Image: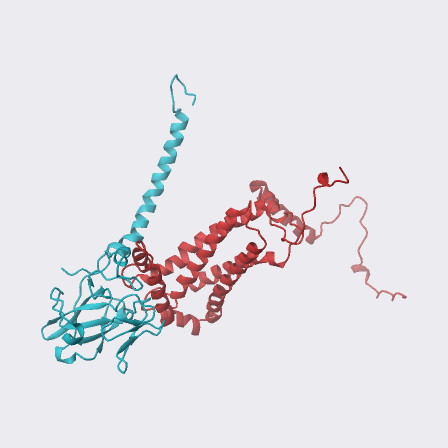
Length: 265
Length: 210
């Protein structure tokens, strides 16, 4: 195809050739790049973070890795979303038996974006439970819990239980009829364990009856105790995943060791 | 273990290391143990006071049907601490011989509305003379003993007495299927027949009558 002629460009806009002896001009874009690299270098020189990052990010991944392998990080992002929305919900929520329902109502009906953020937290909790189950199913059916990953399976199991504790304690916080009676039932199920049950029930409620401190107990467990544990255990979980690597799906065949193939021997 | 002199079993380095570890352990224990005690202590070992609440004159309560009354079960938490009790006068034909040792005299029977399956609120249905739980279908007869569904023992009761011309409701107590009294009331779902009474011991967190 014949090329169209360029439109006339004024001389002042044309790139001027360098004069002899003149150093190359540094462009602002290059300067900005340089500044970024410099700052990253400054941190890296003092922390060696880049080695750790390389260790985490550039891992060997087995053939056959597929979308099912994203369920773990999906669960983690569900947790992060719960953590962020939860922190901001705590700014408006009052954990007292007389004000809890009213403050929840205010978040839902009056505060700007309150319904949205509370909705994310509420539906996100369901999502996290679903995702953690799917992730566990993936690990189970792909046989990824086997040696040497048993410890990671155990950590994952503890994370599953802690997620249930979050779901249980969070259920009480809106403090409507459903929350209240569900918590009564949950505490009584706990208390129906033999010997230690009655005392565990007392511990959960903060006494023999649903009382003044039950709600604040649940609130403190829900927003301080368990999230800290979950965050720490997620760290351990991911460390082990990085250290041990992921498994190939069970339908991938292990290539035969060349030394054992008869023809080549 | 080589030491600095003949026969030394623990080197100084090892002794110092051990001392640091023990010191650290003690330091951690000084804040974790009180914190744990703080979380557990009053929940498990604090007895709430015995309270008596007047609910009406004795002639308000017939002996052949129940009158619902709202009492404050837990003090200081507003509406949340209130609960309904069903009250009637003692009836020899239905209840049999009176338990003479019961504190307060036992002239009135006050049934708790807490279902003995998992603690949902039961309601009295006049037509069938039954208490019915909405959650999982527990059914109790007129005396409060289980006539169907998952509950494991009869409905809890409250001590009653008559003071200053008023019927008063006191602390809660539990009964097993023979209506034997258990003064430290148990949570729902705890069977008190046979081995159950040993599997579900009384607690330190229930009010105690002198």
